[in-house]
Image (cartoon, rainbow, N blue to C red; front, top):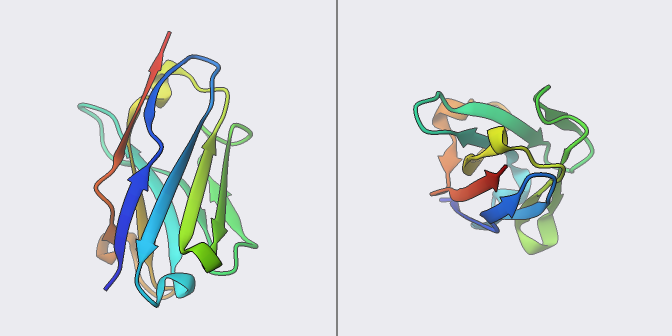
Length: 120
């Protein structure tokens, strides 16, 4: 079992920054590939970023490359997403998800999400 809890969301002005945290409970978290996704009202959930088990390989959607940074600290059972140069279109609920290396996001564990609101 893996329990994920996101935190760090809030209201920020355009151009500002936030640091999102995904805290995990479970002994197998360090073996998980972790991703961040977001969903804005009326829109489909979209991929934002992902990080492999050791933290040495990362992936970002084109819309956030150069602005967001994903990292993990397995000793703390946490994954982070640093959001910088935020834009109003970044407004969404941000979710973290964890899956096995041979799994899929559709079968992943998901957190409840944290709201990020960027004002213009």
